[in-house]
Each structure stands twice: as structure tokens, then as C-alpha cells.
Image (tube, rainbow, N blue to C red; front, side, top):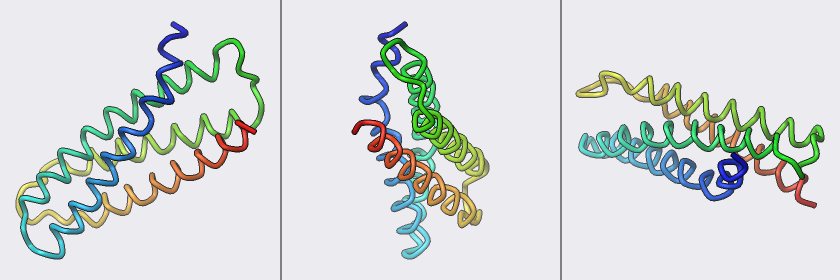
Length: 130
């Protein structure tokens, strides 16, 4: 089971990239009116949610493995990352019924919020690594 935790540094970057691509695609869809970009956004945010949950699970496994000190920075990183994964999952749920003219400002806002959580979690991780 230690292997699962060690995969966390490899897995965490993929959902971040997917969510950022989803946000860009949605902005392009809103600005240009080309709704095929919306399909790109929806697919990426849904895939990002799945991988974010997986990355959060591996992060929890890594944080509770031997050799990782249970400092307050680790706890902050753990919870901020979990909140980011939940925010992305909420954004993915908001894409239900995404065909046509559904407003996406809410889930784009959620993606922006989750990106801020990822950023803060990264700062905490950088502090841990020192």
C-alpha cells in the first residue's frame, strides 16, 4: 500500500492540467459562441474530477505512511487538497445537462476557486519540503 502513496507526486499534476484546460475551453466557448469548445470543457472537468479524487486518495496514503512527519503543514496540505478535489468534483457535477445554452459561470468560478486551493496546497507543500 505504500506504493499507492508514492504515486501521489506523479498523479497530482494531471488533474490540475485537465481543470485548467477545461477553464480555458469554457472561456473560449463563452467568448466565441462555438459550443464544441464546451464539449472539450465538460470532458476535461469531468476527467479532472476523477483524477483529482484519485490524487487526493494517494495524498492521504502518502501523508499517513512511515517516514512522513505529521506536522501542521502536512495537515494543511492534506485538507486544502481535499477541498480542491471536492470543488472540482462539484464543478463536474454542475456540468450535468451541459448541452445547449446552460450557463457555466458557476462551474468556471468553482474551477477558479479550486485552482486557488491547489496553489495554496502547493505553497504548503513547498514549506514542508524545506
